[in-house]
Image (cartoon, rainbow, N blue to C red; front, side, top):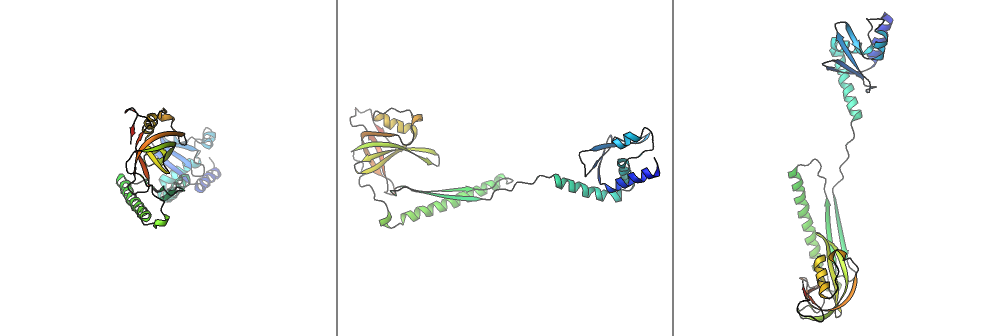
Length: 278
């Protein structure tokens, strides 16, 4: 290896920053600019060896040949103070460049939905919270949930209080019956609403000039219809089904007096067996 060739490779080694990892089989050397290529440098009894193409192309003809990877390893271990600082910077720079950006957590959200029917009989509110919990401990998640539930309860109570204090002129007219006496009625159709525990079925029943509802699960509604001679499997019930079934009912008002609920449903003619009670 001539002095000119040696000087050229020293300059190459100086211009590049290498990451060198020492292992049992030798030194693994890779350039920060081209980290995909890694070469093995070994200090053997026969001299320094490298697996790079430059060394393999010249070593057979010149046993003293030294490539830039060998020179980098020698420089590191002969002059560690000049090389280690640059290597640390190179490693930090490389890791920063390949590090995947962390996805930002979505912000906490609160959604309030209010549902009001045209006749004013339905006036409900739902409060939903969305809180980021990734990285939080089990106890931290529990604390967040308890706070959210307390706030949700306060908002719901305030909403109910506002409804109770509305002027009488703006409140819907209240059903006049609902004293528990048996009255002629007619089942009109089937409705479905979404409650906190899933679907909630109800039959709309005309009681004179008033409208009452019979609430229940799909099975309970199917049993009530069967009592009137209409057999429909619970799984086939769907919102909007129309019936026009004459019947007799007993009713009672809701706790706030705004709604009329069916408590007992009977066919026009009964033999004592075809009866449904809510």
